[in-house]
Length: 563
Image 1 (tube, rainbow, N blue to C red):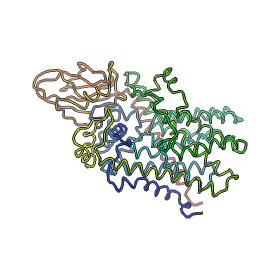
Image 2: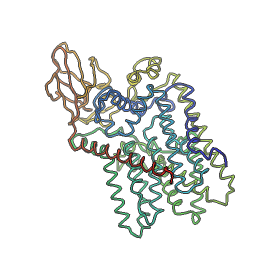
Image 3: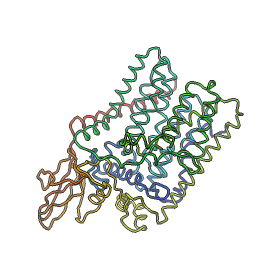
Image 4: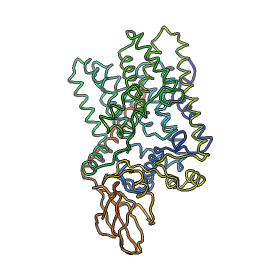
């Protein structure tokens, strides 16, 4: 076989770098989308900047964003991907520029996705060459490349997802050793620390595998016992997320994410489709052919993987009556937002099932099977090069922005800001009016407009700085008068104005405060004080991850020791 098959990690890394070459050579940042600057880039870059500044200054304010989101003291990272925010923040701190951060983080996610899928493929006994081709295909799918091209937070979760799929497959393969406790618990916990919705969809993926595994077990009580033990480990490893979210929702009414019409955001097979274009459609059709005409020849694992994968394709498509579902469950419009997201789960399953049948279908000549895999890879790779190239070139044009993104300056100033070593400059030139996780203090017809007006736009000059105690906001007032301060207050937020503990005179619909200012210099100290058990949960989760990391390293070292 070819020499490159002998070193899959090297090949995976080279292809990951190749995908990013247009941006590397263009030396421009990519801010999401194909024709507009989408909100995801600015949302994630603000939370990453916040984590980076905590690491840089050693002023760790875990629960609120005192550096990002215009230093508004709102809760984001503590409930949305805390693990990933600090990983990204460390990368940004080391790289020192948004362009280099994008290059390194994108290559890292592509590489991780390729490695985890290769590991999954080898564990289910695919031959080395096929596993490598599969890993290269996977890192070129929309599930993984969406961070590089549109800054989608689920991309890192998709790179971890093959580990959860491996746990699912082992549930139905192992009759004697029951359920893979640690693999399942750690895999799901990593997803929660990165992207909550992907973790929730992964639980949906696990259900059919778990039920089949339970039926196949002779000692079903042992299977259930192992499931409960995995759930307990999962709760400990994710205590920082669920404890914070529970404390937040018990004491505050929170704004829901923006509501979307589900039926308008499904997958439709087409040449231009990112999720269900020709390459993925080829795999879907191949799976349907195998299930219909070769059912008896397929292994149980292959059948279940293929069926579950196709089920998630169906969920993502317009074939699902999403309008009817949303009419009866309107909360899904803000919780799920885009049914196309189900393709995050479907993609690795469809790919894995296809590779399994490619390996076992002896009726199709071997060279045709290999050629088909290479064609799918080539189509995806070329499509990604075109997308990254167009996104990079777009930065040199007078691009338009989505309605929730505000420009502050000329196009030249915006470009210069994002290439500047002053990392906050770009975030100040482009702002995103997101209302996620803000306290809901009343009704508003347009929460996004209110966020822009009360957090990002102000007629008063405020000076903000972060101390070990919290966020300090200074301003000068010509006379004693009520003033709106661009800071958010939750029930757990404490305010001290000029050394005196106060309550705000008023909070608008998104929680921004109005206080009684004094004539002259005013100093407002903003701190967030969660319940003690929440802080304990954070420590428990951190120590647990440290123990898990040390144990994994210890086992790796023992495995590589000469015997």
